[in-house]
Image 1 (cartoon, helix red, strand yellow):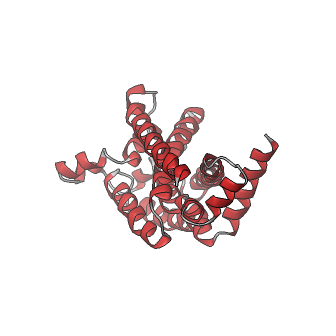
Image 2 (cartoon, helix red, strand yellow; image 1 turned 180 degrees about the vertical axis):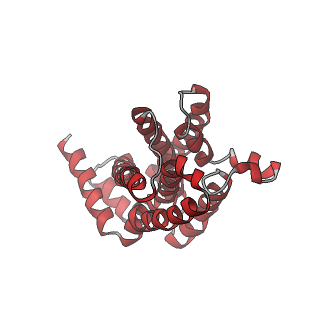
Image 3 (cartoon, helix red, strand yellow; image 1 turned 90 degrees about the vertical axis):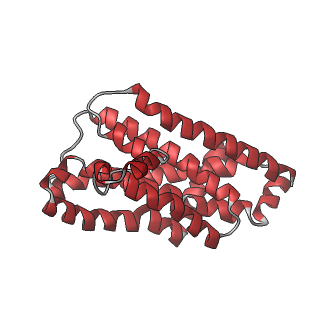
Length: 238
C-alpha cells in the first residue's frame, strides 16, 4: 500500500513538472474561463445560470483528452515499460497512478472555477452542491478513462495532439457548453450525443437526479475500460 501511495505522489510531482500537462490542467482552462466568462456574461446575462458547469466541463474535457494521455504515451511507448517488467511492477499501476493524479489536478481546477465564478461573474451556484460534485466526479472519471485510451493506443505525442483534438473540438462545439445545441442542425445535435461532454452538461445542470442520464456515461466508461484492458494485455505480452 505504501508503494502504491508513493507511486501516486510521484506521478503528481511529475505532472507538476511536465509543462504540457500543467498547461492543459490549469493554465489554458483557467485563462479560457476568465476570458470566455467575461464575454458570455456581457453578451448574455442568462449565461450566468450555467457558467460554472460549462467552464468546468471545458476544463475537464481539455485536461482529460489533451493532458492526461501525455504521461501514458511517455511511459508505454518508451523503454520505461521494460523497467516495470524487470522490477515486476504491474503495468496497470501506471494507468491508475496517472488517473488518480489527473483526477486530483482537474478536481482542483473545478473547485477554483466553482469558487471564483460567483465572485468574478456573479455566476449562479448549483442548488444541490453535493449532487453537483458527485456528478462532476463521475463525469471526470469517464473522461479520464477515455483519455487513457488515447494514451495507450497512440505512440507519439505529435500524433496524440491530432487525435486528442478530434475528440476535444467536437466535445466543445456540439455539447452545448459554448452555445445552445438547438442552434445546430439535427445531424450535429445527434452527433453530440457521442461525446461525454454532452451528457456531462445534462447531469450537472439538472435540478433533480435522473438516473437514465447516467447510463450513457456508464457505457462510455465500460467501453473504455474494455478497450484499455485489451491494449494493456497486449503490452504485457510484447
